[in-house]
Structure formats: structure tokens, C-alpha cells
Length: 88
Image (cartoon, rainbow, N blue to C red; front, top):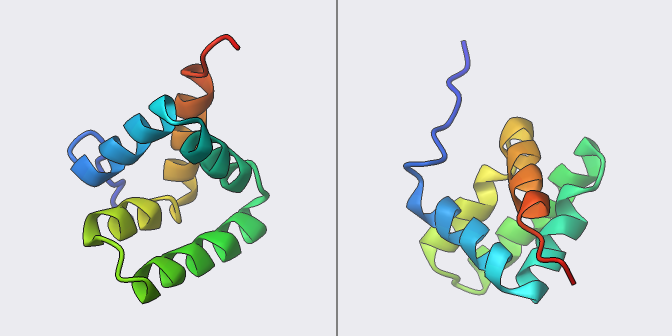
């Protein structure tokens, strides 16, 4: 039995999504990752998480990015980010 992670209570994840909504560079990086097929998305995210750990990134950022390893979370994040795209 799997437990669906709660995203609204995950402050680092919420902050990551908010940053993606406000910052074009972050938004584009996440879109580029999240639009990949599941196999490649997971591979890239694992690499990204390991890179963040090696660079001693804040644990909150690592945890937020790691949440995206869950396919349902990744899909939801992708929809949230795309729905919030400004008209440019």
C-alpha cells in the first residue's frame, strides 16, 4: 500500500513551485526535466539530487527536488507550473 505524499504541507516543495512560477530560469529547468518520459525524468532527477548533495545544497531544496521522483507528484508539479505560465 503506497501513501500519496501531501504536497500542500510540504513547505520546501511549495517554495520550489513558487520559485518556478516567479523565476523564468528555475521554471524552464523544471519544465525541461518534468516533460521528459518517466525513465529519463527519473534518471535526471536522481543525478540532480546527487549533484545538490555534493554541492551541500540546503536539505529543503534536496527534499523538494526529490519529491519530483514520484511520478504523480511530477505530473502535478508540471501541470501547476504550466497553468501558471505568464502570457509572454
